[in-house]
Amino acid sequence: MNYLSAENLKKSYGDRTLFQNLTFGISRGDKIAIVGANGSGKTTLLSILAGAMAPDAGLVSQRKDITVGYLDQQPDLNDALTVMEVVLAGESAQLDAVRAYELALAHDDHAGLEQAMSDMEKLEAWDYEAQIRQILGELGIQDVEQMVGSLSGGQRKRVSLARVLIQNPDLLILDEPTNHLDLEAIEYLEGFLTTNNGTLLMVSHDRYFLDRVCNQIAEMDNGQLYTYKGNYAYFLEKKDERETAAASELTKDRNTFRRELDWMRRQPKARGTKAQYRIDAFEDLKEKTSGKKSDGDLDLNLRMARLGSKILEVENLSKRFGNKVLLDHFSYTFKRPDRVGLIGKNGMGKTTLMNMLTGQLRPDSGKISTGGTVKFGYYTQTELDLPENQRVIDVVQDVAEVMKLANGDTITATQLLSRFLFDRSKQYDFVAKLSGGEKRRLQLLLVLVQNPNFLILDEPTNDLDIMTLNVLEDFLLNFPGCVLIVTHDRYFMDRLVEHVFVMEGEGKVRDFPGNYTDYRDWRDAQPKVSARNEKANSAVAKNQLPSPVVSSAPDKGDINSARKKPSFKEIREYETLEKEIDSLEQHKGNVVTLLNTGGSHEQLVAWAKEIKLIDQTIAEKSERWLELAEFI
Image (cartoon, rainbow, N blue to C red; front, side):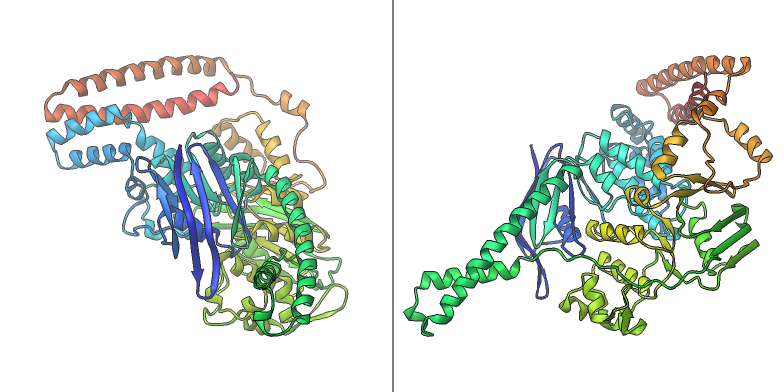
């Protein structure tokens, strides 16, 4: 069943054509990711397909009986509403029922309340608010009464994502859904989309995410869309075959072009005396060979400042904001060439730690001692504040007009920009005309051009295309200095880091030897510990970090021996909870039956409130039951 089709789409900005004569279709059950270089038109195409932007030419047709949910890169939300109000403002039959129910309750509308409760029962919407809270919580939004106007850009994106997921549309269109999510939230979203039977179209650069979620990859390349049936790994294989064939064809075309060019030069200048069909064929060939160009390679072979023996020593570092403890007596000595990943949920203090290491924020206590030869290169999440009316070449020349490479050669700003995939025309574009990914690539250039020897990268993968990410990874693998990375791109982190700092909350930081996947596998193998026991353990051991070369992860024997044995009291509690939950479910069913049979206005309101209270009690007891079930 075809859900959406696009025929002969064209979109241009000024004299630059992103794509033309582009035809594309989405069928029920497809999970398609659009990939391609920054500035190739992925987000523009997504906006056109979602109906948020009109094409210059062509037609987009959507099946009339389906619902579509669209997540923009920069969602437009009402700042005057709370998080819950924004999520409830979405479109779905269940949301309509919940809104009607809340409205009838607020206005003591007896007839409206009866109808709303009947609709709630038919649509199974009684647990809908709990589902909303769960999805928001999984995406890192806990306070549903918080005003949207007080949220950060990343939080707004997560609220918008939750609103789209709650609607459960037939077709989901998502633009960079993993941006601004922490690693646990990404894994939740990955599981959600993998098990969801809906249809998906998205733009993403997260390679693990693409490989596990998608069954088709569509690549934007030089204004054309190439579709591959399979996951991301299959796409890489087939893309290599296509590019090899294209390179062979281009070589043949250029050889033919040289022969035809020689023929054109030898023939009389009067066009009428030449075979017109051959002239037309020559012009077509000329356009074909000049228009086909292979992707450039991002060259990051820049010189690094010399790094001495003393690099960075951190001793008993502590920091808190109000009652929230972000760091509690954190100590570590950086050595060359440390490659450290920094992980933890949003709000745990990752950016705070990096700001303290670079001197942009003072700790409450503790000492940071930096070696005299250390030169930081700090790539932040926040885009550089560049004048929109300044040209790209001028931005770079303001930092340095000439730069030295690792081999001692000197290059100009123009040559350096070319190595960062900014061609001549793009170098003289205004900053305002750059795509989000191109601005991030320019920001990366401005960090590296200063020849740092200690790189601190805060979400460097956001908005960078996969080609740029691959080359950046190769550069960092050969970088002789120190690297500290925060990223939600699990592939990027797995390939680069040797150990991770895990920010566990309440100021605790675990130094774990290995990459992110190693840590996650170890974490998942640990027995679940109740919050009470965890608190007692933290009171005994005050986050003394081991050396990174000494494993802080117990072996399998330790894991088995440390598994908690349930007490008699806990076994009794577990059995009692099962009976209590069953009893509550039966009681809820009885109250719902009463609602359906009708009654006075006061009775209806009282029963509706009782159902809400029962749902909350069931959720609390179920959570405790699951906790006990882990070790009983």
